[in-house]
Image (cartoon, rainbow over all chains, first blue to last red; front, side, top):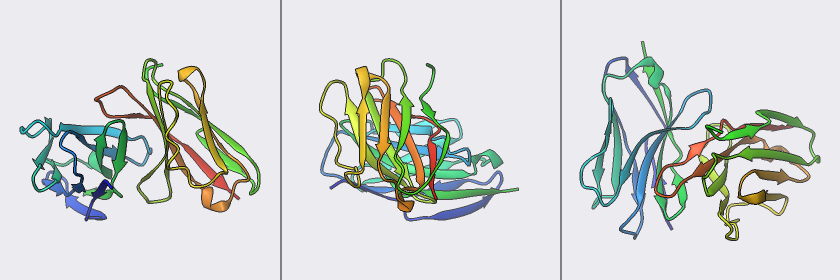
Length: 112
Length: 112
């Protein structure tokens, strides 16, 4: 079975600080995709960043970057210079073939 | 359309009634997914449609739940004889191969 584990149910950081959200996953596959999704209070799920497992280089999107450790099956999200608008639920997700499995999420609060 | 459209955005129904939730995916996306998100929880996979293939119904919680996708486009999720535990946000997403999902804004179902 493929699972995704987010060990931090909730986190709070001050605005402008850097925060890292943890995610581990379990799979026996070699080719797959990993994602981080953001869900603000509007409940719209927004794709933050994507990583292909065959790529060693960590994905980066502006202030968002990942630390992908394939052997350790770890996929953490780093948010630099955090902003109030980053307050949301963040879901780590694993995709193989056409199905995505989500973790239970981390609720992130950015404090002014 | 430009995004995934779900209707209604909110639905309140009486216990025991049937409800239909609609999803209109992004044009050209061959895959369509339904997820359920209970209050403060992660996303629970319900059902997946890919092209003309038989749907993956492995996540449907009971036989009161069913879904169809007509003409490879619009999908309807039907819940018969609703129960209070069915109260949740129902999210639809569509996908093109190799990319992340694009989600709709969801339907918040409240069973009273």
